[in-house]
Amino acid sequence: MEKYVLNGGNPLVGEVEIGGAKNAALAILAAATMTDETVYIDNMPDVYDTNAMLQAMRSVGIFVERTDRHSVKINASQIKNYTFDNDDIKKIRASYYFLGALLGKYKQGVVVLPGGCSIGLRPIDQHIKGFTALGAKVTTGYGVIDAKADALVGSHIYLDVVSVGATINIMMAASMAEGKTIIENAAKEPHVVDIANFLNSMGADIKGAGTDVIRIRGVEKLHGTEYTIIPDQIEAGTFMMAAAATKGDVTIKNVIPKHLEAISAKLVEMGCQIHESDDAVRVVATRRLQNTHIKTLPYPGFPTDMQPQMTVALGLASGISIVTESIFENRFKYVEELTRMGASIKVEGSTAIIEGVDKYTGASVSAPDLRAGAALVIAALTAEGFSTVEDIKYIERGYEDFDQKLRDLGAQIEKVDSDKEIQKFKLKNA
Ligand code: UD1
Image 1 (cartoon, protein in one colour):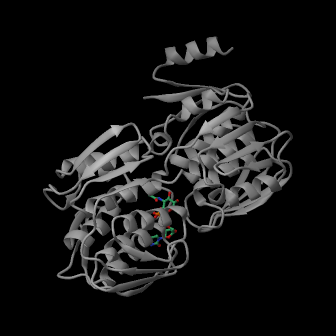
Image 2 (cartoon, helix red, strand yellow):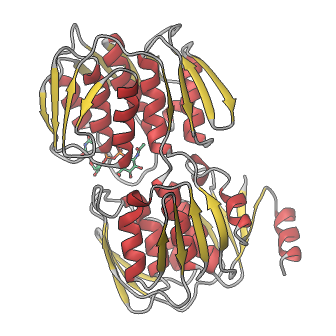
């Protein structure tokens, strides 16, 4: 099993280029199946989750070609069936986006019940509520969700919780429903806007994405398009946090600074300098971080997907910090691993009380999920001595060339496959 081996202690210094947003890409791939014409997508991240989506699309006869590492050409006119249940798709949460896409275009779809990171219960009742309001009959059982409709008809839908997935899924289906749909209490995340822009570039009529009321006028047909995915807010935030935690100086390029404001504002409170330009953010940390309090919230609040990385940074800050997780109920599983690196953190329900320590010490830890895995890598980058991070398959779901990008910033990290390789790394970096 591949793992990372690291020797901590080097401040990260230099420039890093951020890829396309994984969570936008996943929904955009599903939406690309809503036209018989060819769709060209650029800035597609080359990570496990997007590749699993592409593989699932091929398995039902959709033409998929990666024209280069970050560009893909899709034509769904030869789709053979409307059931997505292959092994790859079972593992990823975003499989549910095929349901909104298929329901919109073909008025029917069957998709395996979503997997993804186990960070909480993650129900899909709001997706089902939306599809039902549009006139679909939705059933779950035998590990799949089945949705079909004689006709999809626009509706007024009020979401009970702010859900990124439900907002996007309903938006896709409603794009090809008859008449007008209004989604109230919609999610406002940058990738919700990106999917709306993508659908609009295919001829959809969606207004208000990025606010909490989205208005969609259904159209009969969508057409081909060329589209570039927005930069990944969470990949960018992860490198910002790695720069802060290692007392580094990193320029994070190809980002939309506005999407990073919640993270930047907290880093300033913690004593970092942030320099923004049009499409880059530079994080400079020259002294020990200061404590602060964080509560995760839907956008524009502090993102839950940055909570573990932030907790790792605060674990090294002076004073007591409090982190409250308000989106997912099981998102502190990594704290046990972090404690083995010397962190002093007490978790009570959805709150972590963090007493900053001077340093972490190297240890062998396992990534419990995608973002927590990245957070443990950050901890290991700051730690005294050698660490190994296992189960990096989780990290590779959402970070492209994570180890290479960190090495380019001066980190001592390598992906290894055997104890022999670990020994070699230790000798080289002793
Ligand atoms: C997406 C992201 C994930 C991110 C999350 C919140 C993808 C593939 N994943 O996940 O990385 O952490 O947004 O920003 O884009 N909920 C319900 N019923 C539903 C749907 C959601 O109760 O039908 C609850 C969830 O349990 C959670 C909250 O709503 O407490 C937010 O979840 P949601 O925004 O839907 O997250 P995902 O779309 O699954």
